[in-house]
Amino acid sequence: MFALVSGSFLLSLLHAIIPNHWLPILAIGRKENWSLREILFVTAIAGLSHVASTLLIGWLLFFFGWEASKYLTTIVPFVAPVVLITIGFVFIYRHHKHKHFHVADQQHQNSKTKMILTLAGAMFFSPCLEIEGFFLAASTKGLLSAVIMSLVYFTVTLTGMVIWVRVAYHGLGKFNWHALEHKAGIVTGVTLIITGIISYLVH
Image (tube, rainbow, N blue to C red; front, top):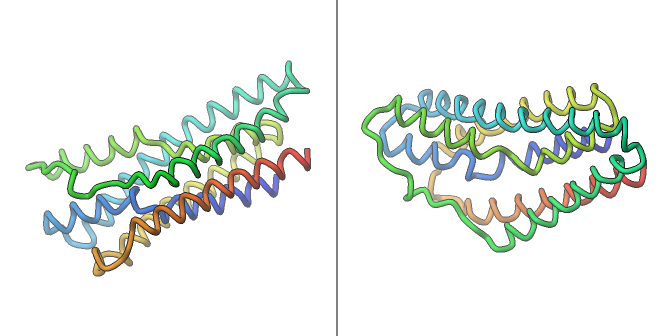
């Protein structure tokens, strides 16, 4: 369980650092002349939406794995690590291709409420897929591990997004965010692979 919780913490931290989750919100807020408080508020709403969809899928996978392990006791413990490792390689490959977000592509909305709902909706329908493998792996460890991972992911991701927006508020455009996204994404992939290997070895 320690490997899963530690891995989920590191992944949540890296997840919050990746700027495509919060930089578009900051860019739109600056463009619309929102105050820092307003930008942080919108970031929190979008972050909650993102975390909610991620945890929803995660818990569905957890209960699926939990039920499946009752009938496939010799298979499920090995499937979860394989899923983690596979997602890790896919994540590294995706970031190796270096697909960037583009702040300029954000559409202008006349209504602030509509804009906030659009951002929240976009975040809800783009859950953190790399964390989902941890919930499947947790299904072989017990309910407590999934609860702890959920709390860690919720706290670290949401807090991290808000902190990064606050830090970057006065320095937008002065930092190489694409390079940060690329490096954090690759480290995330490596974390998934290592966690998968450890989960397999300590089973």
